[in-house]
Length: 397
Image (tube, rainbow, N blue to C red):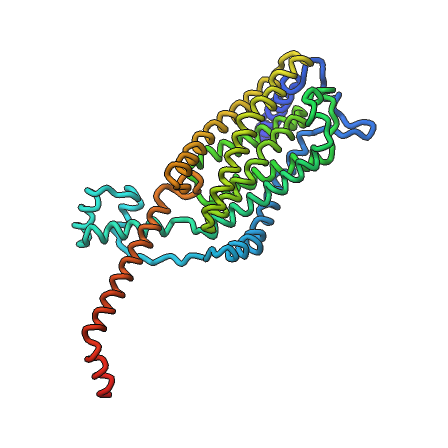
């Protein structure tokens, strides 16, 4: 029994030694001992990253209170109300079909279900539409989430500008590699990195409770890729290029989240204007600055200082994956712009809803309005035709 834990300990130690081999992380001739703190200079350490997990939970707590005491009152000020969902009549047959088969039954399915339940096809359609709306995320929650992301991106963008505006490598990319990897860690770089990574961890931890996005998988890949990239660049001391990557990404996200906020509030013109601004900044930052500035800095310039080595190759592979995601989202943005310009419809791509939710809501509201209109007409006609009877009845009392 005692040999088991010892064997596992030795195996873990062997793996740890192999994982941290200098040839994987550092240029040839550079040792980990070269990056030890000395003369008041502090260098990055992998152990620093442990703090991102507790900070992520701190951000979740902050987010909870932010959404409750800031985002919710702001949403109400914009005229967004907490929705009261219409209750549906329980139906075991329809419920089982909804959960086990599909939420969007075909016309043939509706016909068969109507026969089984002794309902009209219209009643079955209405039941499924109401049932889908039961699981639709409310507008208040979507606004709160967008408001939180907007606030964080805004704070980090301002912080990034304050941290970087006087750094020489922002204006001269050759300085990114000057002295690498013996580049000391600045306090501003530490907090910039740690807070960004903690934020992405918090987004991953909250996936289960957040509004489900149509591009859910792409967001999971993006967040994991961002954490992997930041962690790797930290351990290999690519801090200078890493801060440039972060500021390039944050500057566009502000406008997307603000556009979502105004979309949920029903301010369509403001939303459209912000979305056009976001699109322009996205194309410039992700399709021009990132590939021709950041990737040029990380892929081409290092070759003037160093021979290619493992972490240099791995870093650039991750950045290329990130660029592929940029192209993926570019497709959706162009699709959205086409709808904005030619169809005057800014609903689908920018929305966080699952397919069909908003259409269901609008159809249900239209149907309710039509029903109420018919009831008003019937009531008005009934009163007009029988007004003397009602008056006579009241007079008789």
